Length: 206
Ligand code: HEC
Ligand code: HEC
Image (cartoon, rainbow, N blue to C red; front, side):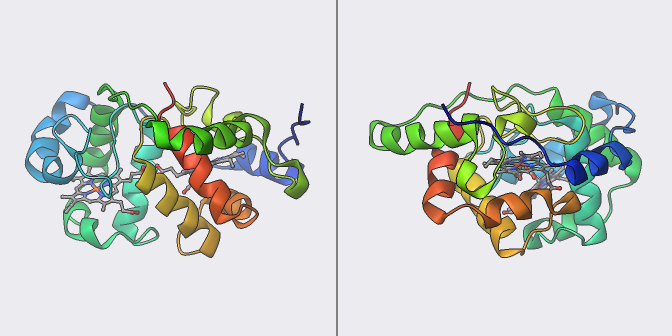
């Protein structure tokens, strides 16, 4: 059994001091029209998208959705495809959209035969971390079932494998910045192989 490295003191301090968690619940119903008219083409009507480059939003953690939309609006997270769509959203719209997608049901996925070995290696990393490089178990922050933890640890279960992989590579290169550098620090210590493996596993978590 691998010994799980614990979350380091600075990260813990950051989590406790940050303004995260103060998000007020939005009104899902009020966001339905925007979601259907402006977001459905890419993310699907119910937040389950058909195309792997467009992330699933169904069942995502509400506070995380709100935080990312605010970051895309301010340009802190740059997503070219989304720029035009977030520009006109008010903070009220963003809160309501967060509530809308959080309340949708995520579609289940399974691991294809050909990915079983990769997913098994990925499972060890997700559950046990990577001791050699002091990487904590992913489930410590993303929950054992990958459903995330309110308000700021995103769901990684039932997400497209290609999208997960792309994000981990973007954190690794520093192209996407995470709050307090948490995910940059983690992804930097992982090999591309490990990133591929853990994505294969997370995508099919139930
Ligand atoms: C033209 C396609 C397109 C449209 C329309 C669109 N998005 Fe996106 N969205 C994307 C892409 C592509 C990404 C991920 C980019 C990346 O790889 O980082 C994304 C990412 C996101 C994320 C981050 C998900 C995560 O897990 O971090 C959220 C939240 C989101 N979109 C919400 C919305 C909402 C709400 C709308 C409507 C107001 C919308 N999007 C409209 C293409 C689109
Ligand atoms: C100390 C807590 C912590 C640990 C441990 C952790 N994560 Fe994260 N993870 C986060 C936070 C917080 C975010 C959102 C960061 C941001 O602001 O971009 C995140 C984001 C992500 C995302 C992007 C999700 C999306 O929808 O775009 C992926 C993928 C991810 N983590 C995978 C992993 C993997 C794989 C591991 C283990 C090797 C791991 N995480 C370990 C806290 C953690």
